[in-house]
Image (cartoon, rainbow, N blue to C red; front, side, top):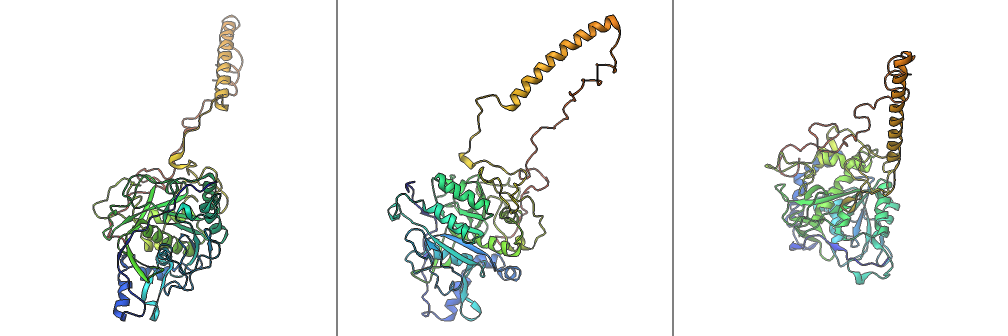
Length: 449
């Protein structure tokens, strides 16, 4: 199909200057690490004693990544640039992809890697998949770069895909690609956007994705974080220090950064719990999410907060039942076999998000036909009963006891058990203390442990 949309990068603009490698004393170089307040809030040193993301590949669908950045070197695979062809780990003018990669899997540099930017999952691998930014950048107007990028990431070993951008309208091929990722048990993480509006685009709203908003140091939702009922989680997104391509570092605001932190947390969990499905990984993040003081008692999920902000250490260490394979994820209607064993989670929705509509049947379904047949049988039964009673008044009661052959109701007409065909509530409906439900998170410290 023709490429008729624009890739809308949602990373915040740079809000502070950068330091040059080799031009600053050690104290200043260490300031870069000190600026990474989310690592302190997460108690990252304790997190890394449990998991570092080793063995997990996170695909970053974005601008290509500067793979030789001192804080990333060795953690970035060649990948593919679907816009220009060739690998996506080469020198780039744009910073966005490099920033996301560093937040997820930067390892720092210097003695003991104590300097520079460190990601939440420093031993994870980054699979960069370059995407076009403007319509005019697409070399083939009949191509579908997002669909190609998602399929490439899935087929090249990614178990987490980070998409820190907006995509207003999805083509059928793109929807199929996202469903393909769900079938292959890949966790899809998408930023909600930075316009401060209560409207999420089709990519963010698509079933099977984890939509991520931004919070500040106090755990309060960032004022420019887009929101809606599809929001599942929040994560740090203000004054985020990250690596860059044409300068070593930048400081920015944005839900892009928040999504990258969730992707990093997912990498930690996929490394620690390789047997869990993507939905069960999301389940651990949701069940351990927190809310800022004053937000307790909020009905969850909230359009702004989702289920709350991530707390990676608790997600890694709390005793949490695995739960259904799809967890809190809504599964695309054409991906019924999501999960490692091909089974669908009990109670999981198969709706197509906010674009879904109720199916209408213009003909008679099986239920309607059965109802008509039952009505005919009832009429016949009434006629028979009248005839029998008329005969009984003349010849006495029939054999088999009151009501005719088989007792009350006659043969084959056992009464329906109460609730037999009633829709049972799904495991993710908001019910107080319901098994498998997601209760409001208890009040905690600002984002962290």
